[in-house]
Length: 111
Length: 114
Image (cartoon, rainbow over all chains, first blue to last red; front, top):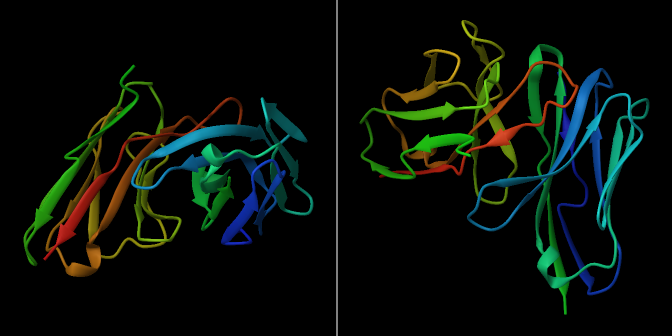
């Protein structure tokens, strides 16, 4: 059974500091891994998708890495801003096209 | 650009009532999913349908049933609602496999059972 874990559950940083968010999964036989952002009371916004054959994916200030063999992905957000405050979720797609989520990391960027 | 559409957006039910949450996607995706999200938690998978004609249980299927009506539509039914089913429900869709198969989500249905 695939299990996805995100540690820490919450993170608070001063504005300008780089954010590092972790996602680990127990079964390395995945199709892809996707990072999402969720604002309070809202739906999920896709940030980055990394295929199983890729090592990293970048979009603006966001960079996500994937180490399938160790079952880990890291989302880096450079030069954080108060507008980056949200909950960040990772999800892995694996056998049977099952999509499994981690519990999320709640981020607060203080001005 | 509808993407994934869920109805209704809000619902209040009395304990024991039944209802169906509707989900439709217009991206010709093969796979569709139902999740619930409780306060401060991630998304837990209720049921999913990898392709038209198939459905499988997720982590928390008890108290729910699903129907994959056609390739576009995937409904979630609560036969006898309980307060423990108070939650926000999300529907998602994606295509098969890993290549360029981003998952897309609806805006959610906020359900309260009193």
